[in-house]
Length: 178
Picture (cartoon, rainbow, N blue to C red):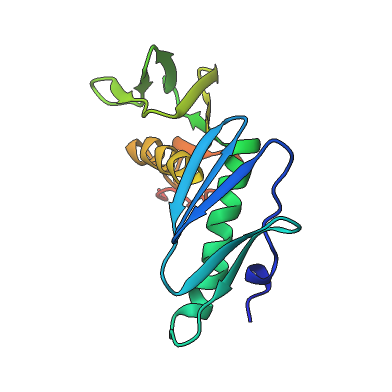
């Protein structure tokens, strides 16, 4: 039994949900999101508790997909009410970032600047030249954009230079000995 799957997803005030087949659509103050769930689980709208996800009998993967499906629905509700954000910090001499229109311009020690087009539904704010905040209503897309930006220059273990998540621990190595 899934502890997470058992809990119904509560719908806060101002959020409406509709279910058609395996597709769940959630509309809230920040926008509208939808997800199509696998056939191993069934989903229904309970006016008293919210959205309830239950596993279907006869499927081997039903229990495995139960908690995942409930979490996906919960991410929709959280996204349309509060949204998601990810913070990245840039460390290194001369490393910096700036937002110009719909493009993120990164200077990461290459011979050229890296121009990253900001996807639809994502906002990137450069609070400082070395601190980026990526925000949006889709958790998967926010995480994907943060991972793509970090992949240009992941933190290296000797000096710690690169793009890292705020609070990420980078294991440092000792340099060459004489």
